[in-house]
Amino acid sequence: MADDQTLNLAGPRSERTRLKRYHWLAKYDQDTINGIIDTGIVCQVGYVIDQQPYVTPTNHWRINDYVYWHGSSASRMLKTQQRGIPVCFTVTHLDGIVFSRAAFNHNINFRSVMAFGQAEMCDEDVKRRALQCFVDRLAPGLWDYARKPTEQEWKATKVIRMKLDEVSAKVSDGLPDEEPEDLATNLWAGSVPLGLIQRPPVPDPKLREGIDVPDFVKNFQYLK
Image 1 (spheres, rainbow, N blue to C red):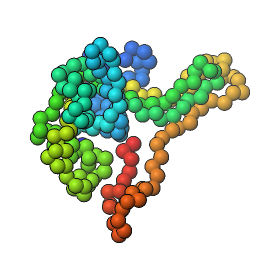
Image 2: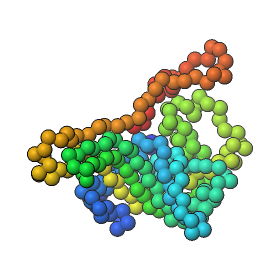
Image 3: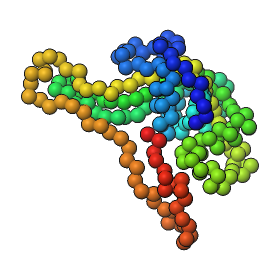
Image 4: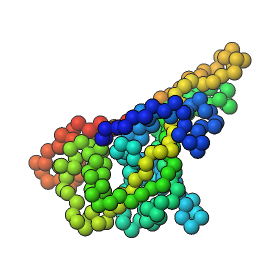
């Protein structure tokens, strides 16, 4: 990512981003928020079209204090969002299951970000720079290795961005919150950490003989 303009905020940026339930899990500092966004590949974008709510999963990336996502130029989602309608952007990581002595107190460990704002369409220059950043975010060096987009492919793609003005994070990474009487029982409690597993590369069966695995694949590490 490009250099960040880090803001260490002591509190929420607006009432919409103030956590009201389980407020002690709230994180408002920029480092935590950026870390959750940057270690995710899939986000969910919520919006309304003709009074019908939608939540669309898509790929995202961040440059400074903007988050970006892209899609087809024919996408109804992007055509609607570019008009500046209200948008809700979220990213969530599932980190574990928390088992309690009491059924009421089972929980999950997670990291999440929620942001509100209005999306805007990127102009052609910003779009091309942003998509290069997106490709290299997946695997550094991938942009230079791969065939570059044709002009028709550029025309077929739109990029939307939203400024991270109203944003907050929620992080749960603890153990069960038990009642004193439950601590005296012989029931087990604790947590089971969860995470994605990275497996070895799988070559395309249509590869011609003699094509080596490029370094960006050999050295690939999932962002999380």
